[in-house]
Length: 317
Image 1 (cartoon, helix red, strand yellow):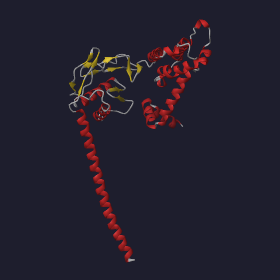
Image 2 (tube, one colour; image 1 turned 30 degrees about the vertical axis):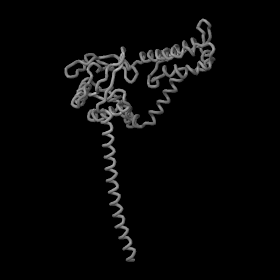
Image 3 (cartoon, one colour; image 1 turned 120 degrees about the vertical axis):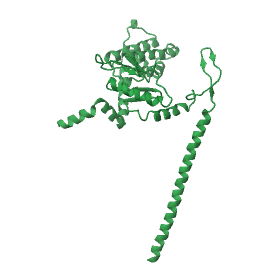
Image 4 (cartoon, helix red, strand yellow; image 1 turned 180 degrees about the horizontal axis):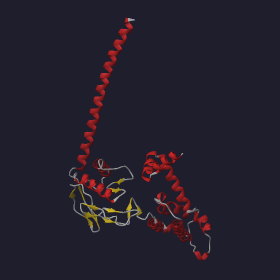
């Protein structure tokens, strides 16, 4: 009995010794982590110290000059460093999406009133400028949705901010009236640009219609459909896309409307399905991605007032 107790005491002492050893190991690990972080910072500083660059322009390259402000253009590490800096700078003023949306140095601020926009804009200006950065006045714009008469203008430090009816963000055009006509026209133009790049293949009569259809589906159609899964298309706009696609397919197959060949035959020959179906397919795929991200769904519901409506329905029950 005593031996068992003595053995337990010995084990306890051993456990204490092991715990002390573990603590020492943890301290050593922390020290190693600190050393690693410090070493990483030193490497980054060495990479950016005394860096020189040139600018390529229409008449050639400039002479080398020192990079003394900002990050080194063209460096693979610069975007990551910039993201870290922006996250730290905007931590105190950044709101959750969709009220604040950031991509690199492009920032979108959404508010429900002009006063809130001015207040948030001033907070951003103060947070950035006190750390050596500036808000580009020439590139700062604002857009009103469902604007009322006499809503006034947005000002930043007493200077009026440019008002626009549309703006481009992440390659998509957002219009104040909620329409997407200009975005659709831009997608059609992008499709034609892609078609012209491979017109040497698509218009070659020696190449089979099946191969042409495959090239079209691989190169041209993705350019036309880019980003449309998040756009609310109307019948007229969907028809505009269909008409442009059929023109491309007819040119590729060497036929015109005077030949009076039905559209279904053109699509069947090139093995190209209806573009509208592909848009809906992409939309359902995107919807599935959004549904699988619960946090995003809740944010959208709050932004659209969906949670309030659900609570009202529950009370009615």
